Length: 133
Image 1: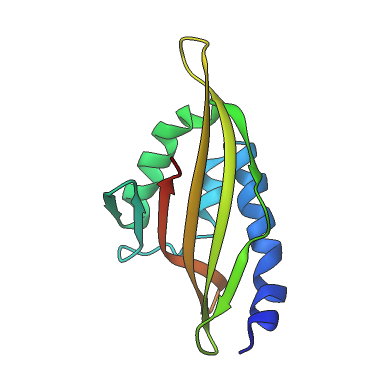
Image 2: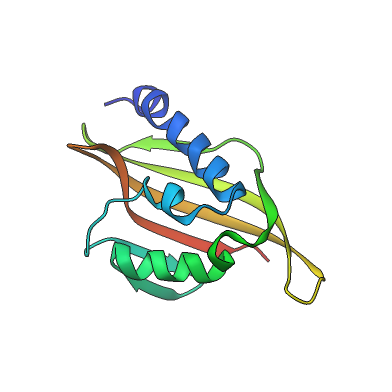
């Protein structure tokens, strides 16, 4: 598959990643990930294995949907096809979160995801997120 075909198929899902993140809806967001115990999510050196474990962490981070903040794209996503049924996306994301004490925290992250075409559609099976300093 060419990168352009992969991009056409996955770009709406990338838009949904942002939309679901901005509503802090963990289940909506994780619908884009393979519901699999082999899912791997790495964030700043921490390895989270399995959809259930990632869901629990995401619920903590987003305070069960009560978190206040927003995320937006910085620049254009990078799309790279890897065979006929998989590909990579890299997103650069800026965000602003309100902390429980009322202060705000700005963040910038790089997020790379491996997408695989599964029977239920394109899903993330491996992702790495790290803060940009």
